[in-house]
Image (cartoon, rainbow, N blue to C red; front, side, top):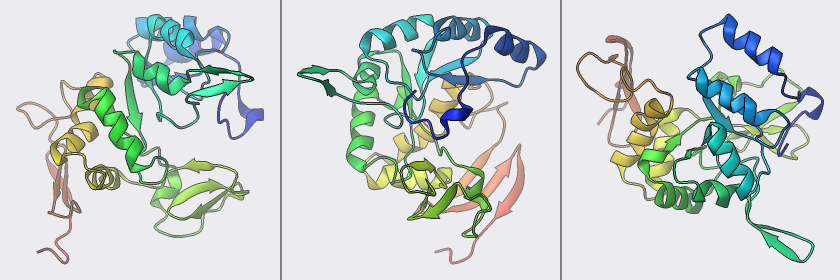
Length: 253
């Protein structure tokens, strides 16, 4: 697997285990896996039968592997570019990476950690240009420490530094501490039109997750989950299910 943080916690795919989990609850809507692992393609096919989104993640699969994964049911790429290689060499020969393979798979959707740290603005623009609004969504990839508001976290494995969560030895990023409004602002600063940035944070993820019948747009009979933002794209008010849950007019102009 590519980019695993704690290798001793990585498990092999167990058909009996995942079937029992899926059959025991209705709350699982998405499951990620490395498609090159033994049993991964059967896993994706099973998830598709159950209406669960299967996503490739932490993978080094090349084009043939991604094509096989897509056909089996892996239709989404988790935290695109992160924990997956791009174009590379093995000895004297060059090979396409997972990144290029996902780009070449027309129907596969992607998600971007657009916190301004995990991916540079050039890559955000490239992904937007090649995959488009309908196939690209934004994801925070945020850990629970995103809610610590600057306080130290009580976990010796991680540190918060430079606006992101890192492994304590600084060998890798461990996750984001961004909220969704940060992602929208980052995309706009990268040159993405505001309307498209907002769609990638609302409509597109709702479609990918299969909940567009009630989420992702302002339409009659949908859940009234609404954000009001000012011209600097700071959140000023939040409605959840039609009820005002937060309002902030401080320094409003």
